[in-house]
Every structure is written in C-alpha cells, then in structure tokens.
Length: 294
Image (cartoon, rainbow, N blue to C red; front, side, top):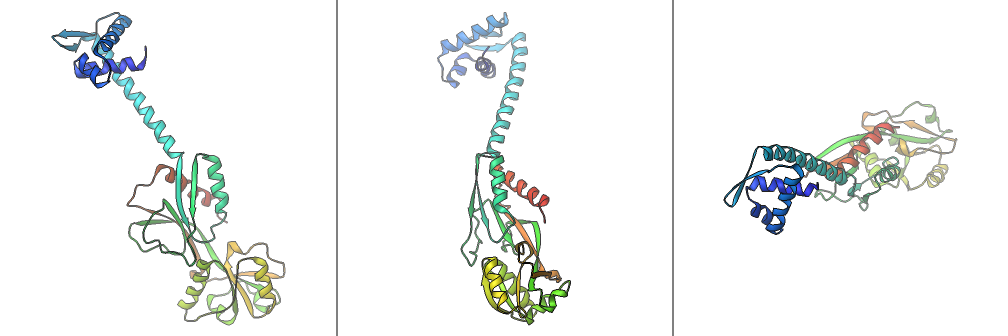
C-alpha cells in the first residue's frame, strides 16, 4: 500500500469528509472515493460510517488511523532530521580573518574535504584593518582585540607569545628571557602583518616608550638581511608561530611580560542565530585548534 494513500485516509478521517480531503489534496472526489474503496478492500473491512455527506471512523478505522498517524509522524520526523543534516553539510560560510592564524588554510582544506558541499568564503580586510563595527559574516577570526560591540561573542582559540630574535653574537642571546622594556634599547625589525606590528607598538607605548623601528619585512630572508647589517643592535620581534626555520646563528628569546601573550579569537554575532553549517564549522575550528595548539 502506497504511503500517499494512507495519508489520504488520514485526511479523510481528520476532515470527516471525502470531498474535503479531495479538495485539500487537489484531486477529484471520485478518485478519493476509489482510494477509500481500495483501502477497505486491502484491510477487508469498512473503515468509516457514512452519515449523510460526512463520514466518521468506525472502530476498525480508528485502529488504522491511530497507526497511520503515528507512522506519518515518524516519517515526518525522519524527513526533518534528514533536512537538518543536509543544511549542516551544505552551503557557504562567510568568514573574516585578520592576522596570521596557524595553518588556517590547512584547516579549511581539511574541513572542505570532510564536507565537500560546504564552501568557505574568506574575506581578508584591507590593511590597515577595516572596522567591522557592522556585521556581515558568519564568523570572524581576530587577534588580540574584539570589536567593542555588545552583540558579539568571542572565544579564545589559541594563545601565542611575542618573542625576540637576535644574532647569537649578541650578548642578550645568552638570556633565557627578556622583558618588553628591553625593546627600548634595540632597533626593531617587525613583521609586515599590520595587526602584529600594532600589538608590538601598543605594548611598548603602554610602558611609556616608542620603540625604534628600523625595518618591516614580509619574509624571513628580508629579516635576516636587515638583522645582518647590525647584529649587535637589531632585534626581530614577532609572534612565536612566525619564528620558524631561521638560520642557526639566530636565537629567539621569550618575552616574559604577561602582556606579551596574544589571544586569537573566533567571534560571532549572538543576536543572529548561527546557521547550521556555520555551527558545524565553528565546532570544527574549536576542536582543530584544541588538538593542534603548539
């Protein structure tokens, strides 16, 4: 027996009318009557009492109606669950990212391999960073500061620290750690990433001095070249995740101040319900950085 016939039967029972059930389902009344006759033949019993132009379930019809109604509810629930799963694994996630998040492209590639019908639409604001005081993203990935807007929620994904790179000929290389105040005595080489430069400069200014900046570089070879010109005076300051694969004659020293810690946030608008597909990506990011915090 086709499920659709059982639905028609449930409609006839609910409306107490063959004609009204036919009208509701956009089929002719004679066709609906034939469906009822087929059902009664299938179950070998009348299912309704005829009362004038109306109908009313009899005892056998009530038993079938209760079973059909329960079955249709189960099927509808399954349909909704399937639609929900589909909405979680299809669609576009709009994100804004500012700053050097560790292996973010690897994260996106791994996610899209797991969910091939999800597209991650990445927006990288122009430098200097654009104000995101109005919100048009599903999620944002920000460093050190979250826009002062009460509708935004933020969760720390990971934390990095500022470090100072020096030539091993420099006496300071023998120290296990330095302070932000020590930066006042060196010429600094800073990363080309605007947000990281701002963090370094803001931390120094909060201690009452403006550091001497002798260069801004976007790659390791430029850093090394600028450092080489005055190895005893120059210092490269960056986040620890940027201080990798340098020549052996350079050493990176931790900056011990509490304010040398830099938080990396995932941010969302709590006034707007997060899309199911964005929630899946959010949970994936949180777990990814929890497992790959290094």
